[in-house]
Image (cartoon, rainbow over all chains, first blue to last red; front, side, top):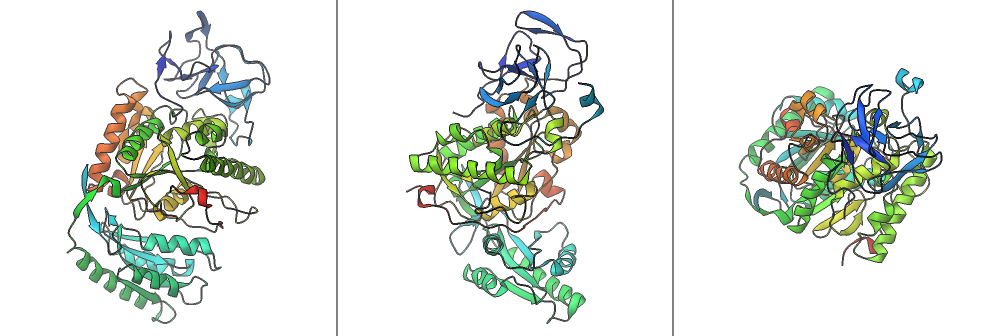
Length: 110
Length: 397
């Protein structure tokens, strides 16, 4: 089978869970700073805006722990990541080759 | 699923009937551009190789491109002193049954007179090709490539898996489908190898990804651009998982290298990373290098899945652009053929978009222009590479 078969909607339809094993959700739409989200039965308030297609933590992820999306490891956490926190280049690294990106003022703040 | 194509003397059928102008060194590029400029809106395309040093890969690529089933006639443009073997190329085109002419700028009176002679010859070929009739063509005679570019966090959820659904239907109908970029399959090697039809092929698939990982590690960059990170992709493994989805779920029948033409229907991986020590730089310097390699391996048309929004098309074969991100689609609708972002917004299912891609493919194969064709996109790029031939385990029995 291919890695993605269905989009699984959970409690919060703005978030996608791609596989049971995943510790991240994918945002289906742009989310605003201060917006409340339902994650694991708890309400979490977003501390920054998150764009469509970006990831947020489904549960706490420890430093060095693998990040799972599509049911597969996509890198390792470089920091402790709280539920509902943006999961991206500032707190995850590749286990293969480093990611090339432009640091924006937004990244510097996180 | 019956289509209509142009029958070539080698028995293959094309879905376009193009006169291609091919320059054999950068020094002949301007003359080529001037020749095609007087045929705006007609099926006259420009391709070429810029280098003046000999390269077996480039020679093979140009041979395959100039004898591609979408090509009806070929004009070769030589400066006169370059290393490219125009004699061998011309002979191979002639043996394929296509009209071919070589103009050599140093012998043919310089820029103006070569442009004039080239335009006259192209005009004659267009008149001849206009007499060709389409004949019935089966879906199993089609070769379709797929690439993704300008990927973002939506690509692996909407556009790529929808293209994968279309691939599954095409493979089931006997067509040949090619997916690529071993450098964008890093992290997927085990799940991909599990789909190989033989254990020996599984070994080859894994080895190709390991080779890509080593190659990119030496270069210091993965196949990952800053725009991928802006769009929510964090690592090459994550990008890979999304890219891998466009291969669908069919068994993998074989592995080819650029310019190898799959011997029968099925799903093939294209190993695009050069063999041997790292030389000549990055394997494919941009998306169009990959598209050109798919076409050199016989692709009649190419699915291009984009999230950030690529506007590229290609010389020789139509490119169907599948937009994964609904925001991008709204911004760049004039460049996009399929709005796969509807899946994210709950307005369509993966299967519905997969079916839409197949319907469009049939129309495009029958002559309907894609958005990039309408807009005149004819991108082309070919650079230096070196490959060993594929091993015996790579092709189906």
